[in-house]
Image: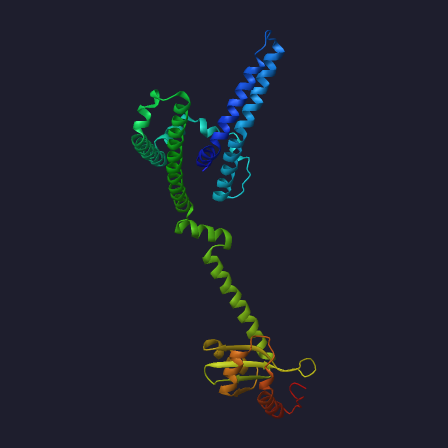
Length: 324
């Protein structure tokens, strides 16, 4: 992109640059047109020539530098690193250098370079072939006309060559990006290893979850003896409720479960004399609506209050209204 921008800038401002160069050369030679050329005069003329040359070339360099920076930012973004300046002794290792020289990547780069050379050479040959008559007649033209014709031919060559190089570079960039993405892509084993490093071993995590569930289940079973009632399905679901009128606004679920857990809850309740009441819709509703430690929803106050009232009457105690 920098080369193409520089060539296009020359095509656009080439006539002005030639004019500036001629004026600069004439002025420099005029400075030397003196009978006595001293060191001061020569130094002054050389300095004026150097400054004038930089002034003429500065716009071209500026265009190419700006284009190069913009192209780099468009490809990789802003990146400042001192890593390339750090000493790397592997670069001067002859064995590793030999390996890099005959590696797959080096062979691919060699093939690409040869292909670029062939393509650019073909384009240059086609441009020269189309203007072969002008090239042959250059020696016969006046020098002013010949210089203009030669400049036109050179600019055409440079424009076509840089345009082709730009297209090849864009294709190469796309290839390099895809190759890089594939290179950094992790295999299944690498993904597993990374998961182990970041999240821990899956087997250990599973074992930890099992232990946590066992601890939670043990605590839940320890809360069953202090429950006031266990509501059952009767065989598949069991929900244990606790209600302390002086500390609780509403009954709270202290244990619940299905299948074997429900059987264990009923067994513990039976061993500790906790009343069990069969109410299939209520048992299912509590199982779905409440977690361990939650108070029952307000919509269930009435039916739960009836069950607790029955239990308290059977025990000979009094019940404070649920939710009061």
